[in-house]
Length: 567
Image (cartoon, rainbow, N blue to C red; front, side):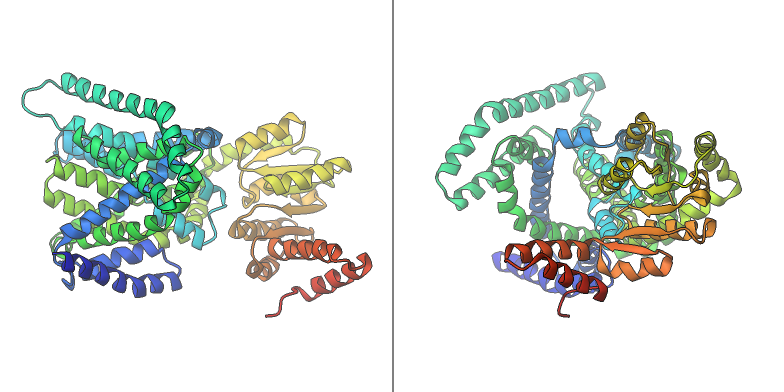
């Protein structure tokens, strides 16, 4: 048996390497590569691995470590600093999606329990695949990218309450629902109280004693033991073991040893997480694909569409523009990796039957595989939809309030994006009494700028109407400080259509973006990588004793060349 386990693990890693490398080369999330690997080598594919149970044990360990990480990384301070629109939109998105899934299930005659569990499954999106796709396409710092990240964090946190709620759906015998919920609620409250007391009075001295041994081995064993121990306790109480791992992470996160714990078990996280995605791929039954092809095709189209509409609606309700809301909705249209755990827990408790579980698995895997394409197309789809007649009224409503503010603007600077870089630039303009207008998608920033009696408009600088209302045709300069390369290019093209002669200065995070932004129509592109290198070189050369004039000459020569490296 032991030999077979090692053989299966060897097959998984040997097959995962070339597939993951291929996905990386074509700029697709590696997690998708692991899913494909599992489907290929699993019992329903090439059947190189027959026993899924052995791999499933390792996958569950990987999920336990993942939840341990989420618990350790969770910070109430960071949570409270998240933008109001993102928090409101994220919470509403989860609640409305659960309700929509429940309502669809009831219409299809699935019953209360199965329908509600389906709503739970539908409410979560894939953090691993969405964030890695946004990062590879350099859209993580865009406004929809940041909103998506905030909502995905909320969804990961919402996974914990969902795990607590699932046992309540499992009613045994003739016990009244209120009594069953009361019992489960007391158990959950008792568990949280015990964890709180342990974190407050015992965790710090315990790990302080461990740290004094100066043994990394003992420290790692203590961390893993805490996670597995609490996972075992929560499992005994009828809750998911993943809940216990998350609580263990919260305990560790409350101690001064949080960062060391994160550093020590980081390698294990990715190793076991890859096993988790491979095990999900192995669950994919090709017979289900063949027998339910039309139904699956409909689900893969309709469920992401439903999630997109829900997310778009709730984000617009929270005050975000149509274009940003729709782009974010498309980003989050798939079913997430934690949905597999919710569905798996439902199967174990008999809340859903295996065929229905297989349908969920197949739909989720196919939707995940389409995510990179949808993320790439999302901004174009959102721009196209915002121009359609029925939706123009939303855009007009967002921009009508700008008419009054834009009167009298002349010979000013238009700043698109007012983050740290934009604020620095704006502060220097203010010191020289140069008038400027701010275009920004962060409502809190807009409010702060307006309190200083500066004209600031809420919206995306890529909007032609917004640039017009900011008085671009009468402005002296356009400064684009947004970190998103694609958004900067869109702003440049719109601005050139309004004012072909206006000087445009923009930033580029990476050197390979510089020429593309020049090609889009920018007059000056400030490369963060190059300028950072020049400034470091200037400081180092002065510290090494070179004359200031000579240093200036070297730096200027490098700037004229466009680089100072050897390649």
